[in-house]
Length: 318
Length: 319
Image (cartoon, rainbow over the protein chains, first blue to last red):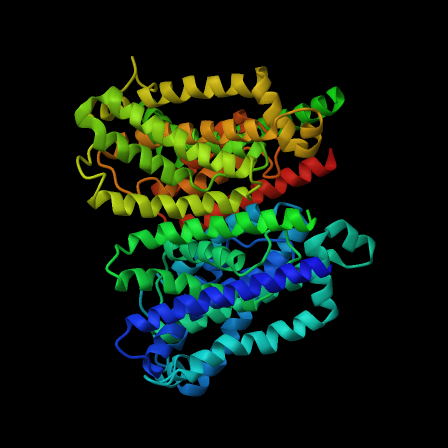
């Protein structure tokens, strides 16, 4: 257990160091660094960081959700459609409603996985089609809008980077930490690392899985609403959803969450989103074709998982 | 072991008949809505359009039988088509050879990473997908500059009728390769080993199987099947682009799942995948016929995959 903890610590430190190196590099490229640039950074990572955190919760619980991008796109479309031209209070109310719907969609996904006994990948592959279809139904064309006051509350007025930073950190404080410390949190790690052992120790596997997927859905819903707040619109495209899903898995894995389940936390994925954001931007500013950043991101993800796997072998946790 | 094998075979054959019934039902329903579909030319076109998906799904089938998955297969397919078209000025055979080399290279990297280094197949192939997108995006303007149209003979081979109507060249290619794959899976040692490591890789290794070599071979074969499928897709659409095969990625997984191959490995067969491919192709024709929006298409697609997979797991739990 100590070895595992030590490995996790070293992983987190590694990610922090990577973020710092890349961050300094990027800041050096800029003519100046002020709150405007900080806001750009945070807005650039916020939706994908939230999505990576949602994916991380589900992977820690022993699942994987290939429909998480579709959930975010659906909530993005719902919120942009119904929040357009509304008053401040209505928009705030709708924001909470849609985040809740995100959680509900997640819970239903978790229930289907539990009730059907089909592999997570297959269920969520199917629901990813379904949810993108619903999103296109809600909003056939890109468009929509949001109350400007609420948008400022999410993205911050121009040089003010505090609101988006709050939206990055607040979910960690009010969703993740209470979950982590609760019985459900322990049950989540238990079913993630060994479902049968958890069941035999009296954990209600199905109920825990539904809760885990629901929390993942909450993060996806939050990501969708935040996206509406940042872009002031929504685009119902399947490619957006699949790219977002892949990035969420990459972010979770890079953030130290083991795909085998039961290992990792949410701070790592949030920082991994920064790494995934800095790389293409640094390359772009250095005059390198940004297409190379795809290669780097892919290779980095592979490399990280490879090293993680080898380390795990050495520390004896198979 | 033999009783277990028989048990699995019985279960599979039962669901094959069910799938066949679904296919016939869908076919009749589509013919009822659009009488033209109940004609030999329409069936011929449908079958030739099903062939590339069938080949990509074939690669996906053997990966899933070992308990893996290949999410880079669409980019491998697009990449192979791309290379063939760029190299086409130096002769079609040379171009095809280059395409095959590319597939073998990418398949080897995937297979060795999964087999030797214990990489999670999902992440490995996802990462490979990103790397390939990057390589080809860069390549278009630098080292892979050139022709973006397929050689004439391959365009013909991807579209032309073979002898007489419902048969087309793509169908023949699919049938020959599909037959070889069925032989490989059912009658050869490698096929047995693919099932064995999908069933229990640990046990297979203790029984003396070189698991990494089997996985290596699996991912190389998968990449080659993807490459052939990609060349057919390129031929059918005339020009190649990086996003050429993207619409085939999730359907290739869906066809295998509908066909009853377990994503955990060890259970399933290519026969099911063939039926899954045909069901998806007829379904997309049906959805196009009733002029449904993209939204309805996606929803029905998702609902069908879910329903079929659910039905399967219930059938296999009960028996």
